[in-house]
Image (tube, rainbow, N blue to C red; front, side, top):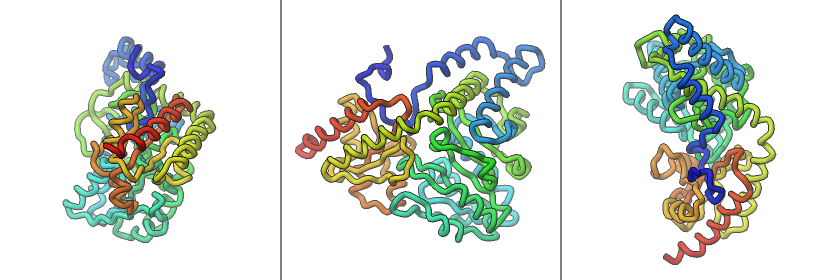
Length: 387
């Protein structure tokens, strides 16, 4: 029995990564055995591999309410973000040089944009409000005739705060129809409904497999058909993915991602009550503990609860809970233990930032997981303050 199948294990860090669904593992195995041919070749085994890829593409497009040919496979959400950021900004620099972005994007958006700043772009970062939301009017006020790119994540990876993507998309295009709007939806995909027909102002949108029970190493980028000719990807090479992302496709993982997407769409219709109950159970338990500060807003996605103890360093508490087989994080896994730039952008004080913990659920979690966490927090608050 694997460690994470042990019922004594309480894994509560699903925003960092999810366990691979056994059915996804099985379909990947079958694809490794049966869809082994290069999908770019022309004989029957290759056609079968290409058919597997196109079936997966259609499954993912269905979850986003877009066309299949607007989905491009990548290695991960970070690659998708980089492709969109560089691919949109560089071809537009002949008519503008301004980029508007939130102050708490994932590093795979934040750092490429800061690199573009070093190349001469003007970057305006809009800090979130103290509740973790972006003020739509402040963001839109920064968009002008010189704005080539705007970017805002749909759901924050550390607090779970939802952003009003529909209002931003509509407002950005009203201010400047040529501004490219990119959305990092890695934490939003299959946690909230995404309908790109209802978000016509969103030009590109990134998703990732390992947040939805597919393996690490596979993701996708939505590119609206109207933007296809104006997005210049940073790669050159073969014709794969219609020239957007050259290189022989990872057929087994693509097939696995397609199944995970289809299963995730089914769960999205049924999991809300379960996750809401877990979220309320945790929030109620936290309210009974001394000194706890909630950093996630009330309307955050149910999957994520960020809070601070106000007295014990995050890593110290993570290590303590680890000893009790309860696994949580202090924030984004990509920050490798660095202080949360999201909480800093929200204006939280240093103690709140240094003592923050992030709990993130999936549909597999149970009330017993929450009980184990709350028991660990109670014990830790008693014991760790006396070390």
